[in-house]
Image (cartoon, rainbow, N blue to C red; front, side, top):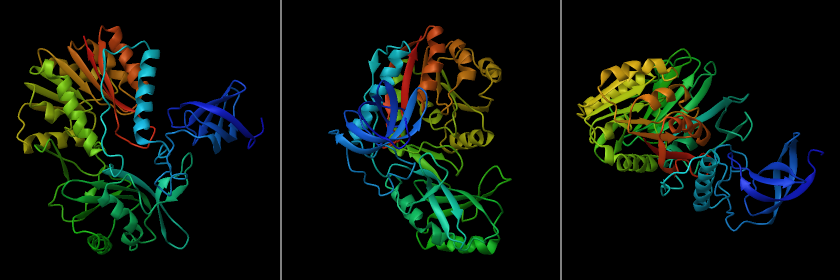
Length: 434
């Protein structure tokens, strides 16, 4: 079939990347901009033997849940893919997709949790920006276009925290004093509760004079914005501003989690709080005893859990995060947490954890998108009564969960976390009971 040819079909579902799924003469097409329940006309942009890809031209029959995107960059920016779908229906579809995938894999949870949702807009407290300089020295700053390496220059982002959105619009002015001899690779924006940070990865360090001029530009926006810088050969950022105000966020108005740019934090403050409360609620039947928190980061889950368990062991593969977790436990006067470094791509590295305690009662894990396949045999055989799995990718969670199922665990509870509204990301929390 010729590329660019106009076709039409009914949209029966959404794919995991947010594209509508339809069929033409039995062949599946993944159509950008199309929604379930619509009949659409689209242009074919790619043809494979078993499927095709397309881009919507117009909706012949429009979904009741279609909305006009609020963002003027929506059709080009690769950050959000579902602004044209009602937010509540986004959650409904993601929930259905997760449950359908679980059922297809042979899982039948006892309970489906209500989705944990927060603000639909202004929810991101952390973002990475692409950047390049044009021939006349102007900075082009924004997000990669969908399916492309091209940068869509963005002056305003509706999902960024207000403080970060304000910085975004002024970044070309802020960076105007950076010499042409320095190539900026990436910019990270972070909003803490006490300050905001602009963290820049670049080809070279800055002279003190240039750094001071950039800091002065930041202060023209707000006095609490910090400048952090990292050269390509450096493993972590250095604060070039007054670092007396260490970046932190709070959990339950009780714990302060200190962190630095480049270190992982959950980007959605409100949903992170709800996730922690739900985790504590799900594990309340097994409070006390020893809990192991795998992929613990700087203590986001370990420190709240310390209030409910006798002993918490946090395990992380990144030394700087473990050091920060130790500092956070000390600063919050949490004395029943121990944090260790272990290679979480190698189950043998966890043997020492088993030797540290007489019994492991609960395991919590919050792995990256590629899951925890390498250590799942250890998790399944550690003897824990409960395993709580926080996932940012359904397929890897289901793959890992099959190992728990084979070891005699039952999925008792599962629900989605609306961590990234207006995107196709599906995050979830699930509890397995032996």
